[in-house]
Length: 356
Image (tube, rainbow, N blue to C red; front, top):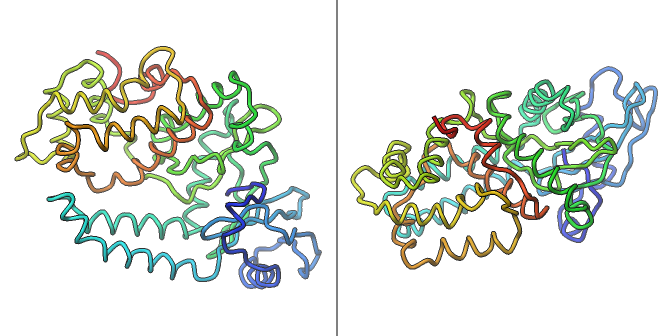
C-alpha cells in the first residue's frame, strides 16, 4: 500500500472525508481486536490521509498489539469508474484497429479492464502481498509488510517507516541509487520463480528506503501472474538479440504470436529495434536515466524503418501486466539514474537467457 506524503499531484485526487472513513471502518473492519476511534478498546486513526491515489487513500493507525499500521480505504464509486474506463476504451477500439490491423484490440481492452478490477479486489491484493512477504521474509535487502486484515473495501498492513523513494531519487547518493536499482532489478526478475507473480507497478511511490537499508515494497494490487515463472522464450529472445541472430529473433516472436506467421518482417529491422531499446542495458557500465528513456521512445516511435514494422507487432494475450511491470521498473531505474548489471541479473534469474 502506498504510504507517502501528500503532494501537489495528490491534491487534485479525490479525498474521502474523515466521517466517511469512519463509516467504512465501522461497516467493514469487524475483525476482533481492531482498534479505531469509537470502537471498544479505542485506539487511534489519523484523520489525515498519509497517501491518496486514484482509487484509494491510506491512513496511519495503531493495531491492538501497538504496531503502527497502514489502513487502505477504497474510494466510493471506484468500481463504477473502472466500468466507465472500459466503456471509453471500447469507443476507441475502431481507431485502434485502423492503426494496427490484425491487433487483438477487444482482447487487449478486456485484459486491461480485468487488471483494473483486480486492483480493486483487496482480498486478492492481500493474497499477493502475503505471497511476497513469505518469499522474502528473511531477505537482507527487501521488506514486505505483513497483512493484518483484508475486506471488500479495506485493507490493513504493517506500516513501513522509511524514506519514500521519491525523495531518494532527488537526494540519494549515486552509490545508494545504484544499490537500490540492483535490489529492485533482482526483485522483479526473481519474484516469478519464488512467488509466481511479479509486481506490475514498482513506482517510486510504492517503494521506501528503511533505516536499516532494506527496500520496502508496497501496493500489490497490480501484479502479473506467472505461475510457471518467467517464460523461457523471453530469455531466449533476449539472448538471440544480444547475439545478433535476427532469424532466431523472428522465429521466437512468431512463436510468441508477437509477429503473425503470415507477415514477412525484416530480421535486420527487429535487431535494430532491439539495439534501440533493450540491448544497451545489457552492456557493462550502462546507467539508466530519463534522457536516455525519452530518446529511446522517440527513436522507436518515429524511426524511419520502425513505424511500418511496429504496426505489425502485437501484444499476445496475457502479457499486458508483464509489459506494465517492465515499463514501470525501467522508469523507476531511470528516476534513480541507477547503474545496474542487468546482464548478470538476467543470467541468474531469467530462464533461457544464460549462454549454453
